[in-house]
Length: 138
Image 1 (cartoon, rainbow, N blue to C red):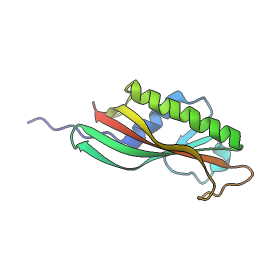
Image 2 (image 1 turned 120 degrees about the vertical axis):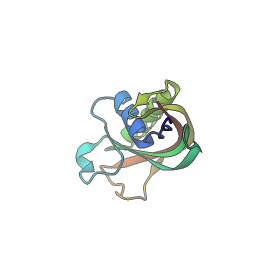
Image 3 (image 1 turned 45 degrees about the vertical axis):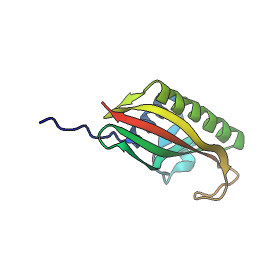
């Protein structure tokens, strides 16, 4: 009997796609690191919802992506660039450990975030965008 495929880790696929496509020097994490001021520019991206459309073949994840930089202009540009990279990786069916991205679409943003932890300040500006991405196992 053949073992059914396991759905891939969407966080791992998305972070790998962003690391491969973003400019050198942009840090990509799943959680906000304690030393975030040293890591700017920074993209924090993780799954916040979604469900398996087919438990052995297709996962539809809702992804929250926050882009942080020391100026508002840089944070906005990073958010718009990261959007292009992520959606392009989905169109290209970016392959990583355990599977590949197969579709991506905007759900909201990017827009500036001023009221979350870590707090916005004179050296931290953040933009948030939400996406729906689908992933399939190899």
